[in-house]
Length: 423
View (cartoon, one colour):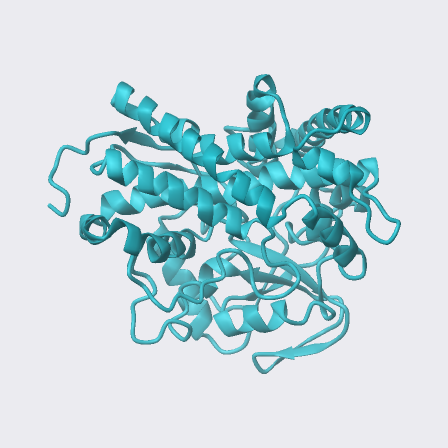
């Protein structure tokens, strides 16, 4: 058990709602402490959430666990330290909550929908959407940045990729907010109704995909839904339930990283004008390192869970079979051992090398959409900085109440921050 000087990672309304400087200090204390901290199971809406978990907070530990998927298993649940019912995992997790050989099968089939040709074909659409976002920002002069900037591009891209008609985009946005932010009263006001809210939102998204899949079976088009309902490898196809589950994963995970990285990127550029100036001095040259630095610093997915299939020794600590572990990417991405000679708490758009784990650790569960997320972030920030170089956050962001997603739910943005860049 961690001693009284270390934070309680299961304290949702204490540790996880505290200022980020306190969160960083708490994780730094855990990384310095000997061994691996163990924490009680946090409060959960499910009736039998199971025991507590070990917190992997060091970069090397997270990488080592990620590279041993046969021992550190995802099947018992990856997105919650609470033990969730099996149908719930199947419904919401898709590939995230599976292990080989099923994980490999699903990923092989799903990859048919994400070929380089198809992703390259999205470039024009991403550029058009980014232009429209900046057009609207400049016309209005100010906006609520999460909905008008951060969420708009990934939502539009995923919906276009899957062939979701424009009239359903708001429907998808609202349901994905419930799934990502179920622990936040802004999205689910009644904390006693979280499971029902989750299942309802997921069921509605699944119904939308099943309807679309039936239409694409009858009349295929060039979208990913058509590719997936007709994809066959070694005689196997995705079942209707697997396709619906994958769609839920895609609209949630495909939206989340880009959305929250964008929001945090806007906040970071406002807080660090010298980094904005360095980026603007060489926009094309600095953008690749700046995007990776935003993803590292933001760490939109705070952790993923793994469950041990057998005993293992990690960081000199023997972990028993059946133990839950939480791989805290947010902490690993601030580990001085992984970023020697630099300040990992600092935001540095020129940081290189940058071995961050913002898209997950190495291994079979590395983010399938990492390339697409980088492409969207690159296009959007390039468009913003070229046409609105003084875009800034004008008030305090409202952070998502969550220990899983490092999210922002509200972000006031102005097109012209009213000061000289770098000043």
